[in-house]
Amino acid sequence: MIKIKEGILLGEDELSFTFSRSSKPGGQNVNKISSRVTLLFDVANSPSLSAEHKNQIMTRLRTRVNKHGVLRVVAQLHRSQAANREAAIERFVELLQENLKPVKFRKKTRISRAAKKRRLNEKKCRSRLKQERTKPTGWDE
Image (tube, rainbow, N blue to C red):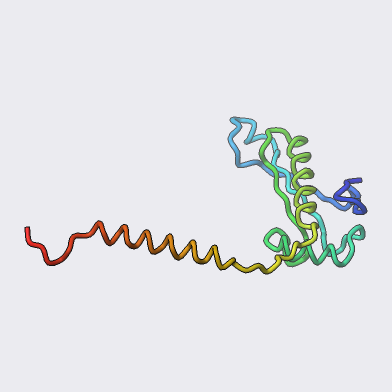
């Protein structure tokens, strides 16, 4: 069982893996061994997730979820297949943890009158400084 957060556990049988040759450098090893791991998770048909959680994942991770509702995570950092498999699972858990957090709503605030006044005074001072640097147009050299 993979623990995503409190109350959400996924069975490893819900994850499927495909292996292919990595595009990373690695000498002759790259040409012989399929070390890249692609983790596939069917979000749309997962029995472990509630409808609300499925909707959150589908909307927030829409670039990683295909039209059939399958989430895809690729790992090819390591030279060994086992290490890449662990890295893919780790990244998958991080993605779900990040995207299942509740959204914090922004409180509307106003800029204080003093802050507005300070900002405008700084702009006036800067403008005056720049005007003093320019030559008067009436002078001949």
